[in-house]
Amino acid sequence: MKRFKDNIGNILLLLGSLIICIVSAEVLLRIYNPFEFSVKGDKIILRAYKKNSILTKYSNFYNNKLDAKIIHTKNSIGFRGDDPPKDLEKYLSIIAVGGSTTECLLLSDGKDWPAVLNNMLKGDIPLIWTNNAGIDGHSTYGHAILMEDYITKIKPKMVLFLVGLNDIGVEKIQSFDEKTMIKKANFMNMKDLIKWVEDHSEILSFGQNIDRCRRAKARQLSHHQIDVEKLGYTDLEEKSIVERKLLNESKFLIPFEKRLENLIRISRKANIIPVFITQPVLYGYGIDPATGVDLGKIKMANGLSGYLNWKILELYNQKTREVGKKNDVLVIDLAAKMPKNSSSYYDVMHYTNQGSEVVAKIIYNDLMPSIKKNFPQYIQ
Image (tube, rainbow, N blue to C red; front, top):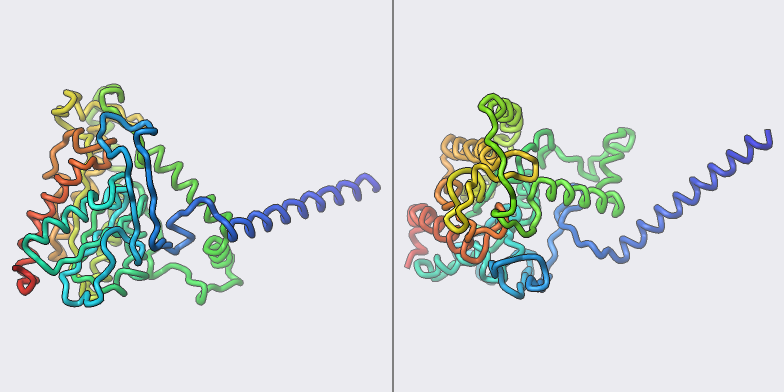
């Protein structure tokens, strides 16, 4: 009996110590959190006036594809670009939304493609204001939250959505309209209780974001050096394997389609013109002009060929094209129009300064006819 009581006492002591540690960690993270993630539960956190300085010459980036020193700044609303002018309604206002290939984390201010696009548009439109609302790792689910919580309040006239890459494999994520809000939480419902804790706990938020980073790295979505000449080759998969992989991936396309349509609804409800942009990448097919590497046969992080990974991404690009056509939304087919050249990429998907210029030029050429049609009053 004494041993039993001793064991119970030890267990209670252990649980008490664990609770104290958890509470202490929660308090400390609220006072000071050295990891500034952009997501907490179902909330997006924008950090105004945030400035990062990155010295790539001391990192493992190579071939001078990036500036030796990168300055990455967020403005008063937490986006990249100039602050909104006081008389914003007089400007043709455009906001670019997407993940890391929109944010362009490792391109200095003014060299990310939305900034380059803004400079190109200035030649035709004196009163132009373009901002970069890209957030590393975000999918169309995050874009909807960003639209509802921030962008619709700014009231830009047009939003450019670069989508597809971060939506691969995303299926049963609840829409923004369905998410459990604090004021609607039913604490007698275990799911609501768990959701409330997730949205308010710094520890759980930290763990979720670390897991997102881990999964992104496993899919080569994180920023790191890629030398295509050192990736190695793999044989192209047999036709049956390709068909099976694509069939398995097709189950994610219906939820993706619904999220795209949700972005259209949110935009049009706020009198914003939505524009979709398909996602280009380096891998897929053809010979890289810069290195002579066969981009279809390179071995990707998931063990599959560049060709099969491209075929998977193209399912989402094609769905974007279809949704755009069905809903009378302009689709800029960047995936088809951007040349596959490693000079434009510092890894298999993120752009160099040169690549950013290529992206902006393609978008400019396809966007101008829509601007002339919908906003002729702004054309010089």
